[in-house]
Image 1: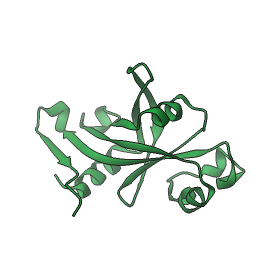
Image 2 (image 1 turned 45 degrees about the vertical axis):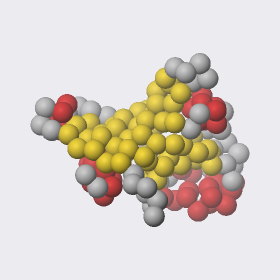
Image 3 (image 1 turned 30 degrees about the vertical axis):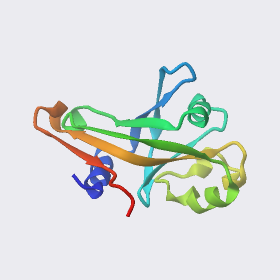
Length: 146
């Protein structure tokens, strides 16, 4: 599996996925999010005081699990990586319009608003399971930098 196949799988399964972060006590925290991909990274718009933001600030390890159901032919896509909280206005301005929905509907103050930050997730590994894995699986791992 190459990274283009990961992106194609994410596109086919839709923008809603579950984001798992690690709590300060080492436990999981899982929430649904809307994910858009841009230049090899997953992006999520969130509130700066969200639990997931606090968790990522302490431990950047995350896992994304795309929704599974009859509409997805029971296929799974899981992506592991590291997340970064992006609060600087310049980056928010550059990324504000990459989303497949209008962020202004959620924060009319736009990218300069302190009420919205972005999560940038750099993927390290992805696993695709066709029909719960009964029809096979495929894996992608980021190769070493050259």
